[in-house]
Structure formats: C-alpha cells, structure tokens
Length: 110
Length: 114
Image (spheres, chains in turn brown, yellow):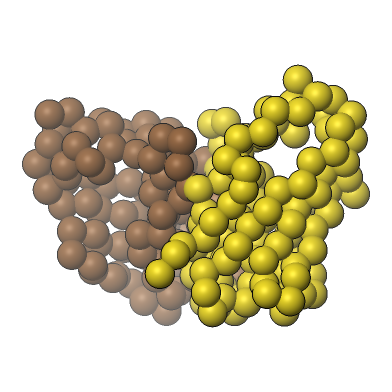
C-alpha cells in the first residue's frame, strides 16, 4: 500500500471543473483522503471516502472511487483562483500509517 | 478552537547537530503523528503516538525519535543531522488511531541543515 500515484500538474480556467486523479495499489485500503496544501502551509483535510462507497459529494467537491481499478478522483466544480494549490490523495489501511501520493499542482487561470 | 500548533516555524542547523521539534494537538485528540515532507514530494510517515505509546514507525533511521507527553503534546528529536534531513516536518493529530481517524495537520516546521 505504499504506491500512491498522481499526475504532477493540472491547469484549468476559472469557472471550469477540475478533475484530479489518483491510483493506489493496495486493495485492502479502507479509507482514502484528499488534502490541499497551499504554498508554505500544512495540509488541509478536504474530504475522505470509505472503501465501501463509490461516491461522496460535499458542496463543490465530488469524490469518485473505482475499487476495481484502484482509482480515486476529486472533482472540483466551478474552480476558483483560490483553489490553486497542491492536492494530495492518501490511503489508509486501518493501520496507523497514511500513505500519500506525490501531489498534483493545480493552477487556475483567471 | 485552536488547530494543531507546531514550534518553531523555521530552524537552521548544521550537520551533526541535534534538533527538537514540538507539536500540540487539537484539544481532545489523543494521537499525534509525525511526517517528513521533502520539497516536491508527499509527506512520509515517521511516527504515530497514541496515549503516550508508539503505535507506528515508518522507515526512518534510529537518529529519529519521538515521545508523547501526558497532555498529548509531542516532541520529535533528530540526532546527528544530515543535509538530507532538510525538509518540512509536519505534525498531525487525530482523535484515535486507525484509518477512520482523520488526521489534521499543523503548519509544519521548516528545517534547513547546512
């Protein structure tokens, strides 16, 4: 469960939707998380999904989980310039350890 | 309510020195985890403590150690610093342990080793 992969960069226009993708390798992962990190700051928890769910929606955020393909995505509707940041997915297998991806840098173009 | 706090915010040390980083969890949280984030990478797990006991350890050398106090605050100690220890050290607190306990991160301590 230590290989969590994300694409490095994503650029979108303000007002469009952003989709950030993540793949993980451990099928026993029980919880999957999305965090946001702004420059020079710590990580802000955005949302998480339990592995027996397929989708979770929270205001502008939608998380989709495809367990068969071990694929997780975060969709941000009506992306704003304040959404520019690095987004990390993380998996936890019920243990005490979180495994983080390499992060996707989202740039929102005004 | 105050979030996770860490001190100091920045630190500059030279090779071979020792450093102590401090973390105070969210009130009511009993678990603290430490992560190292090297520039351009995701956080790497170092330790987790719960109720003053070590509950998990990542793949870091014995130069790294930590402890948790009765008030649930925590210290991370790194001995014999190497240049490669330069990183952002993040502390996260959670109510409990296990994957269902979301971890809330502090702002981090930026350590530079010269």
